[in-house]
Image (cartoon, rainbow, N blue to C red):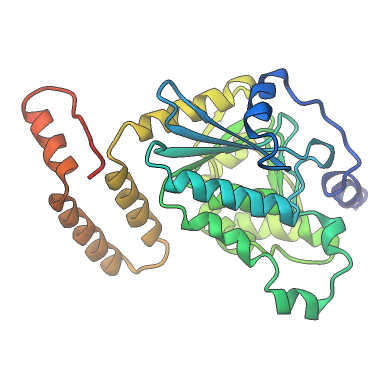
Length: 296
């Protein structure tokens, strides 16, 4: 019980407040220059040898990247711009070494009542991230708690640093997850594990998250972002239209029965035969050469 009270206090006083401070790595200084004046709470750049990877870093270091409304508006805007950019094939979303995002901004929420959140459909705009047609890789170092865990789960792939910690500690604040935690976590790790995490507020280590299927890979913290960008570069090298079709088909599996999903998949597969990239890919295979995809 004492440990649980300590966890609750830690969540309230540290992870969801602006009390903690962390230095910004020198490697982000160039990105700051690129995005200065455009965004206040995120840093934006293009990565990869061909600059075909959209890169977004959450940047509220004093608040451990607590997800205030302005930060989410900016993140949605940046993702929308990368989604519309024909030169970008994949997006990497990350935070700092200490925190991907330690939760929603509790200071921003604490004074609201039911009529406020109901009338504004509070947090509804967070789900705009899921409308992105291009894959998003979450590169998680440090804390991904509450809204931070939910934000990571909205992405298509999660890579975690060795010391990353995931959790939904809303129970310690007298509320429940409000941006998909009860739904996505259950689909990712199963009912029993999701119930345990949500009802106790306990954290899940990166290793356990990988074992449970929440993340696809655990990496040394100093290699995490580079590996995420490498994966994003590989995805970006393929036909963007086919990548988008793959993403749509996989996401449909969460909404459809097996029979409906198989039918949907078959129709999307058939649709690829209307694209030049499908012809190019198969011709290149037959001719034993590298395909030259043109995204049409």
